[in-house]
Length: 544
Image 1 (tube, rainbow, N blue to C red):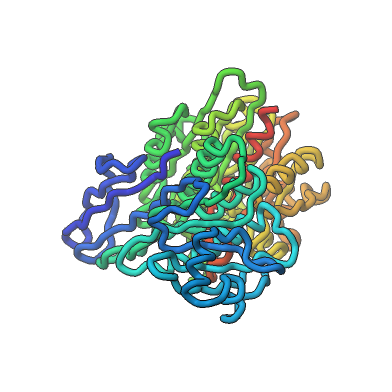
Image 2 (cartoon, rainbow, N blue to C red; image 1 turned 60 degrees about the vertical axis):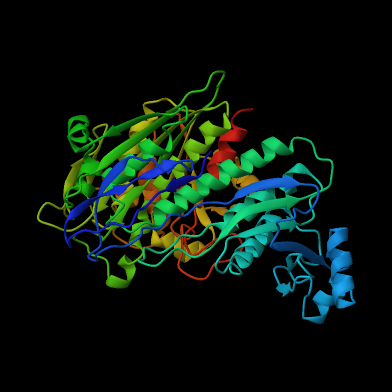
């Protein structure tokens, strides 16, 4: 999968006017479609152009290497290239291990030190591997953390970084490659200043005779590019990313993939009876959209449907959020970002599973055309809902899309949404919630998440929670009258829209979707791209 890049030119304009912005292009070419967007109230700026570096596999250290990443275990530095060991010993009189320990290096997992270069050789970044052999996910995190720190060494020129971390099988080698790529991600700020130098080349050094390393690296590139695309969308400010622009981005992303795209605008949504999406998006001057991806490879026996919440900005509507709670609500479309990016990657990997992806896109703003608490909405498919709170908007757009997804008769529907603050309270900022129609379905998703290295925790949908949604004026309410178990209530609501006999899983990614703190492992500040890798792994498992 080519990294989705942007070619952003410096643009002069009059404050308040609308200008044409060069749109993202797939690949590295300079051409691209134009997109109209309301610009910031400043004259002349350069929009960000985040990219991932190229990555190769080599048996020996490339001559152009600027930084070499090595692991430190309990017995010392591991897999140090002989030429590096000789040069360091000759220059400093001690081995790499002894020099590293002399400046405080320890085997503690993730602890790093940087050693100076010997002559014209690379600087060495030593990272602790822990006292026990790291798991593939552990290596993924260590590679990401080390590459992220190495990127901070870039000054005026971009860097070439090599990793010589221990990998004895294809799984760990791929984990290192994925972690390195994910850790290299940078989202440049929208600024009048020239973008800072970054890493432009990664090399995984491994002299083991492992079969199938070419496809392995291709897979790592494709997965990392999908995660980067999801992060990129989440990080864009809401004046530049809104329902129509995200729908156009979705078209561009798969224009060279075997994926069909259908976009329903507000008129088509009205004609189709998508009452939830229309209600939520009705308060904004930028009307809603529904994006449908279709991937139907030959020989596919299973059918996976994915649905991602795409609220490009959530003010709470008439039930207005407090100011502090609104600031990160550009990330309320992280579920849609994950679904669109994952389907694109699934197609590029050529997985033998039919996949349909739905992204209901809307902007939830207050105005004289906003929907109200106590409104009764007719959803897609005819079910009526008494709206309890305009800040519980995500479940309404998701309900419409879940019903539509069920019409495709999939074997499994998985929805992904930044749905509830209650899930964040329950599980924190690094673990997503999982609720499902049955334990077998939950186990399928949990197995995929484990294979991908993402953290999910199963929560129940107690039978009595359906009673909390009883309404005197409609088929059901969108919210309960109490706050207890809010994540479970939201899942109970969504379950009402799943077609009978279809397995379903709900992923509440409200906590891990946006990192408001410092980077850690391969996870940057800002958009994280959570769930992309799990959805890809789930599709892979459904091939069998």
